[in-house]
Image (cartoon, rainbow, N blue to C red):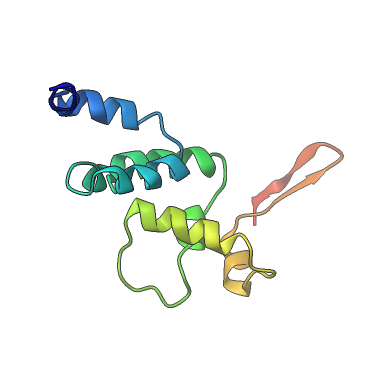
Length: 116
């Protein structure tokens, strides 16, 4: 009977609780109950928020952590996973460098020429 009561918790409560999990914990949730939790563990709302937090203040990140030959759209969970994988590579590609906008700051003053 106690097990049945735990399952009867409204989905809204479960979803709210899952929003507090970090990425590793969110992946582990999928293993708890495949029918119930697996779809929630892939929910783009949670993963988009994790991506937003992780890359807050960084420019051009939406295209940087995709594999070079990726043509298809990726879910936020896949984006996050690619970025985690990508952070271990020892180099940056020339097209990634040229994607950034650079600012020249000299003696604490930004150049009048603006972004480059």
